[in-house]
Amino acid sequence: MATYIVLLGPPGVGKGTQARILSETKKLAHISSGDLFRENIKNQTELGKVVKSYLDKGELVPDDVTIAMIRDRLSRPDCEAGAILDGFPRTPAQAEALEAMLKDFKGSVDAVPYITAAENVLIERASGRWTCKANGHIYHEKFNPPKQAGICDIDGSEVYQREDDKAETVSKRIHVYLEQTMPLVDHYRKAGKLVEVDGTLAVDQVTKTLFDKLKK
Image (cartoon, rainbow, N blue to C red; front, top):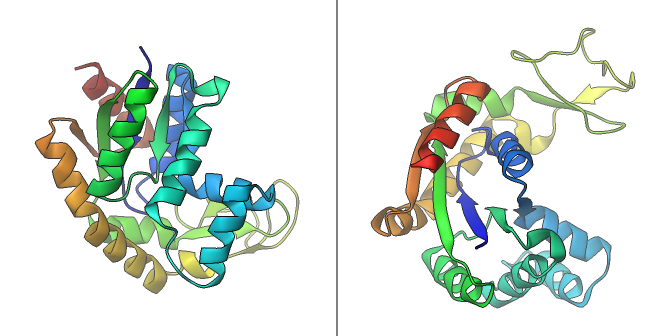
């Protein structure tokens, strides 16, 4: 039977890193809703054109469009064993739609790891991030600074801080995320599927805790 894991966690908590490790270790496709939107828009698929029409107007993409995109992605061969869903669902209504959809794939959501950390920790992590202009290599001014300030170690291009990585913007993103996600966290907690993991630990300790809890 296919395995489906929904990964939750606010900006800066290291969710993307854990999603990659889970995907590689468990041989499950990692499906990021944000990446999926970008892929469909870039490839100018019919769904991508619909998504772009909403984003261009600054409107939220309707659930049925997002769900259709997720369904299409889950139907691909690399998802036969299941998938790790990152960025979807975002609401209890989307969670219920996902459960209904997964029945068609002879599965259901098995576990929902929720990686957490205090807001000040999240802001320090996310707002210290710098990106290289040429190829997007990621640095952190405290945890992983480039050898030469302002210069990428790998390609020698300038490193800069994106608007959405600045402290004030990060704080807003965290508040919006927590506000929007709490009903979803409660939904999965009531369903007995939520697995809480302390995201303030070192990356390898977060991974170990996550895998230990998933085994249970």
